[in-house]
Amino acid sequence: MRFLSVLCSLVLVGTLSLGAQQPNPGARIRVSRSCPLGEHCALLDGQFVSWRGSTLTLTDGELGDREVEVLPGSTVEVYRGSRGHALSGLVIGTVTGGVIGAVAASSCEDAGLEESLVAGVCAGSSLVGGVLFGALGGLLVGALIRTERWDAVTPPALSLGMLPDGRGVGIRWRF
Image 1 (cartoon, one colour):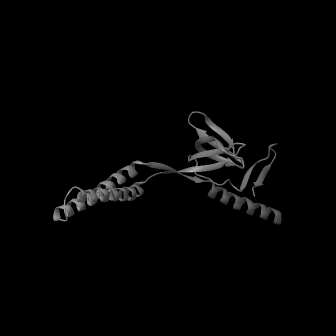
Image 2: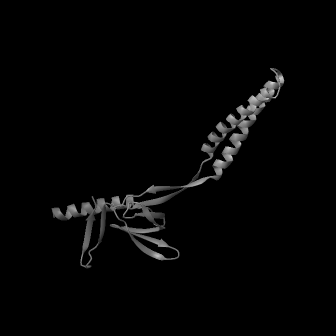
Image 3: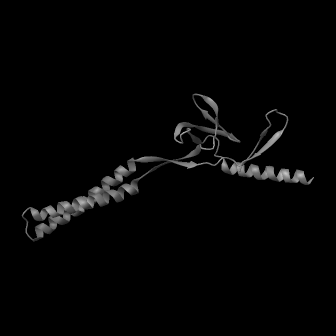
């Protein structure tokens, strides 16, 4: 009786941890397999179906379901959406525009304008114009640049499945 309660506890814990680690069905998954030389040479992409032990099942609209063996050097990642870089572009554009505006402001003195109100207006407008133009340009360029976000997924530690001969249920615990 004690053995049965321990087994049921393991199955319950395994099922809970299995559900917490697996991505949602239909999520976009990519698997990077490692080559013998340590480089990632094969990239497989598809929608998640199931994960049993070290076998990951993906579906593709063209090829249907396919099973992928996740080897120790492989990386499994789930797609988390894309993001823009508007804030980074704003900062980089503002700094770049400020430098260009400062260079343009120094040319106001070289143009023969003496220390006068006209030289101050020329230098100030060059600096402010450079900062504003750079900030606007950087914001637009940063918003247009989009990158994908991928998060690594760990394989399930405990998996349940039929034994190869089909005469029982097996539990696999990965360390």
